[in-house]
Image: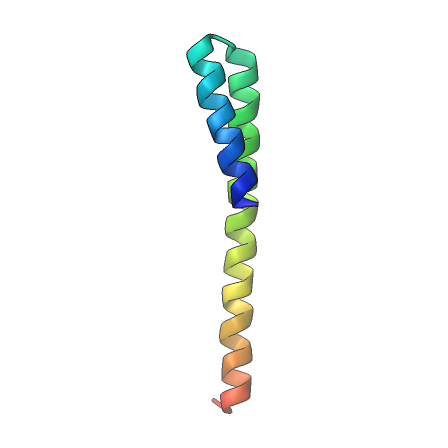
Length: 59
């Protein structure tokens, strides 16, 4: 998912440099959304990992 966020960010930069403001804005919005979703998924997995580790270790 981070790969796609990076791809859309690069598309936004290139479109912005070439003067395609609408496309650049849309691609930047998609990149931000994908990054936030990836960040939320990462935090959920970290929390699940911490709780699973505590359950396995008995703490």
